[in-house]
Length: 105
Image 1: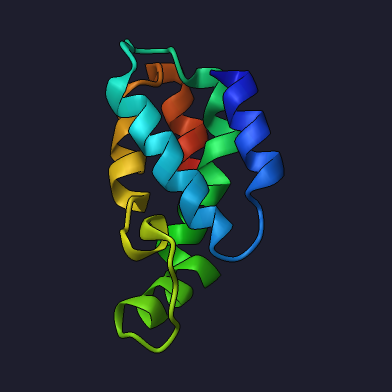
Image 2 (image 1 turned 90 degrees about the vertical axis):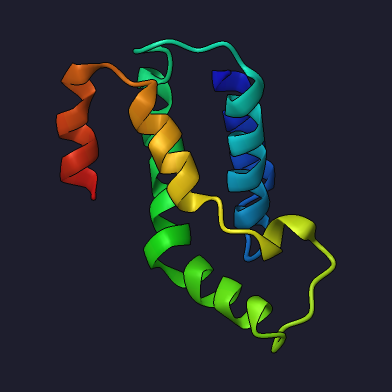
């Protein structure tokens, strides 16, 4: 999983590509059999992208797309997956990593 996240993060780091990153990770986590602690090592890679989609520039861009002010052909840019991805991340990290997550937010 780490290699997949690193590759996606390297290739999807500009503007609407960040939405594609979150959407892709969300879809991967939905189909993978995971348990508590499986995503501990991925938190520093995933969390900044989630926070950006919920609170940052990505959130503002997504609002423009939803209002039709910025046209896009990317289906992923039209859907908000930040909160859903954050919930999944919280579900699959160990209890001792919760403090890192809370401090980051």
